[in-house]
Each structure stands twice: as C-alpha cells, then as structure tokens.
Image 1 (cartoon, helix red, strand yellow):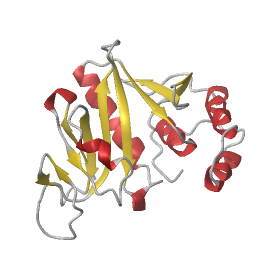
Image 2 (image 1 turned 90 degrees about the vertical axis):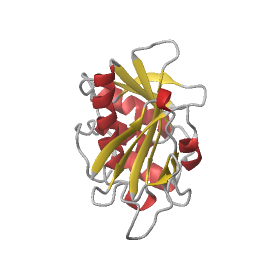
Image 3 (image 1 turned 60 degrees about the horizontal axis):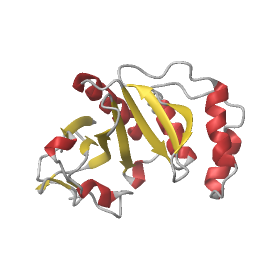
Image 4 (image 1 turned 60 degrees about the vertical axis):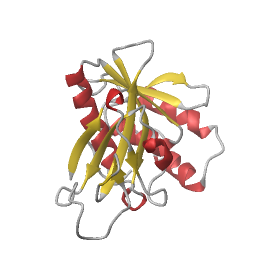
Length: 202
C-alpha cells in the first residue's frame, strides 16, 4: 500500500471517486481542500491493466484508490489542520486504512508547520478509527452534533484516558443508532482506548 499526498488546499487538487464504492465521493471533486490517498502501489497512477475503478485525480485516471482524506486549514487558527472527510472503499472498511492514512497526513502536516489536527466524527466506528490514529475526544461537539477529536501533528495525543474515551462513546449511546452501532458500543463498554497504530478490524 502506498500513501500519497495529492496536494494542499492552495494546489486545488480534485479526486473523482466512484460513489458506489466510497462515501462522501462528491466532496472530493471540490478543489478547496487538500487531498491524500492510499492506493495499491503496483497500480498507483498506472492508467492501464486490471479492473478500472473509475476513480481519477485532476482528470487523469488513478487506479485502485483504497482510501482518501480531504483537509484544510482552520480559518482562525493557522496552526490547525482540519480533516474534513475520510473515506475507505466499502469492501475494505474495518481494515485500518483510515487510521493509517490519517497518520500519514499528520506527518505531512508537521512538515508543513501545523501544530495539531482536528476532525469531527458522526458515528462510533469513525470515533474508534480516529483514536487508532492518535486522536482523542476534546469534549466538544459541532453544531451538527459531531464529536470533535484532535491530536498534536507531531505525535499521537497524550493523556488518552479511559474516562475521556468512554465519555465520547457515551455521547453516542444516547443517540438513535443502527443495530451494528449499538452492538459495537456494547462491546466497548468499560474498554480502554485502542492503542495508536493498531490497524486491525474495529
């Protein structure tokens, strides 16, 4: 697997993803966010051979995108980078690709001079995945009732206590959830936060 930075927001990169295979596909055609992807290295950018995914970068074909993230800087806090959308190919969800890609972006953000990364998540599966990428719950919510998580750009978050982790899960427990989400939350009752760098199934 190969992680690749397609460009920062100022570069205006676009990524056309197959909406049948990726959530938020329409958000990646916008040119006002930076983009990064995970792909199969033997086919990345090859433009030939194998099954075509229909995914493309800036109009050029890009084979076998496995995961993608869109991001942009905070308007009022120039040292903060927001991850806006993280998507993993439907058949690969739960394999740790989202956390792996978010850790890659954190490394590039450090090189770019950002001090911290933030993301707002709307479901417990994304919450767990971001904990694996070194984020922790801030106790804040957006106006859309998404939980805000953050991490220092240079290294995973410190002080990721069981209490803070469970506080975020408790926010989801009070919501109207799917059967799969409820079962997940039951399994996580009283659990410690997952270790950073853990890329296995959720």
